[in-house]
Amino acid sequence: MLLPMAKKRLRAVFFGPHGSGKRTQAERLAQVFGVPSLTAGSLLREEIEGKTAIGALVEDYVEQGMLVPDDLVNPVLLRKIRRYVNAEKGFVLEGYPRNVEQASALEKVAKVQVAIHLKLSDEAARERVDGRRDCPACRSVFHLEEVPPGPLETCTRCGHGLQGRPTDHPEAFYSRQAIYHFMTEPLVSFYRQKGVLLTVKADQSIEQLHTEIQEKLRRLGF
Image (cartoon, rainbow, N blue to C red; front, side):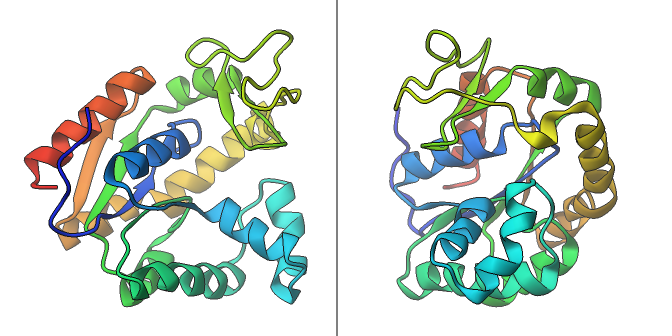
């Protein structure tokens, strides 16, 4: 069921550990509120596909699933986000900010109304990514149990063969988790102090998590 239209255009950010379902939940929430779903990866890929100077610099980072340095990612993403703010559109943003410095920079461009923290243990996250598969063609995301792909692990949208993410391999996974706990988890305190933090336990099904986020936003007046 769709939520009633909010008085203000929703400006939300998602953050959480690797495998918590940020992209899926961000896309679903954006559809409910009728606002753009923005992901750091897709915005950076626009630069790569446009063959810009910055695109050339960030390409290796994006393709290998590595974190792009602040001095490269901030100018690109803030410029793109500003387009939606200037057009008085809301947005749901995933993959940015990844640290307090990025969050502070974002606040100067767009005041975040709600920061949705998907809380998930390292053990549960590891189990989640083991079954995750991506479509390299249309960027659809599947899970072998929760969102099953087509026969022989093919995309149900475009028919392309699916693949795991480089960051889902055990060594890369635990490295990303360590970076998350050190760099990104402090966003909990940052957004709590701003009075916009919403923490939701992510160790539940996609549908249950989506429903809980909507219900909590409704109680907050969105």
